[in-house]
Length: 186
Image 1 (cartoon, one colour):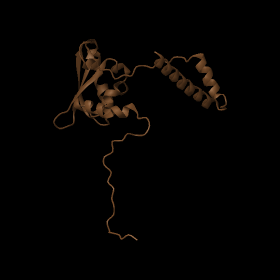
Image 2 (cartoon, helix red, strand yellow; image 1 turned 60 degrees about the horizontal axis):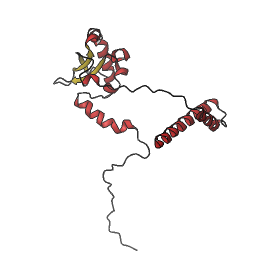
Image 3 (cartoon, one colour; image 1 turned 180 degrees about the vertical axis):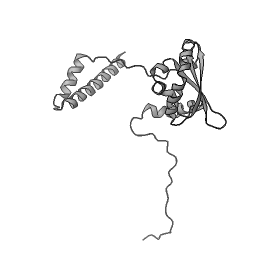
Image 4 (tube, one colour; image 1 turned 90 degrees about the vertical axis):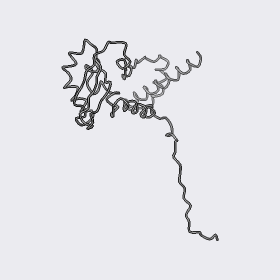
């Protein structure tokens, strides 16, 4: 028998840089970069930048872009600078109280006390051209062969909702596979 020395063997793993297993969402890969850029411009909550249309509404968002948040020395009562087109300036000036309420609702407290509108030309300024909107997806009807193959895949399913979902999944997979095969050819 081996004699016990009284010391326990300890294992201290080093910092792991291993990623999750499988696919990782793109938002997770870019989250730190977006936060760093946003914080450099004063945006502690990057949601204000990335979801501007949801925060202030599509009518206001179509004519404005958030540019910068400046904080006072006390930390409260920040000033939000928003770009707008020159022609929209007077209309957006009337919307400032509504905008401030919606932005503060995003933060969860009265973080913004002032909103300053900066009128700009439609082109020529990099900050004015920043787009955070996702392009609309254009749905293309799959070919009749793919539709037939997808229906054949789901024909054994009795539940109509599950059958429709499985057919749609099969169409998506088959369409993607067909696009990949075309890309390899050309």
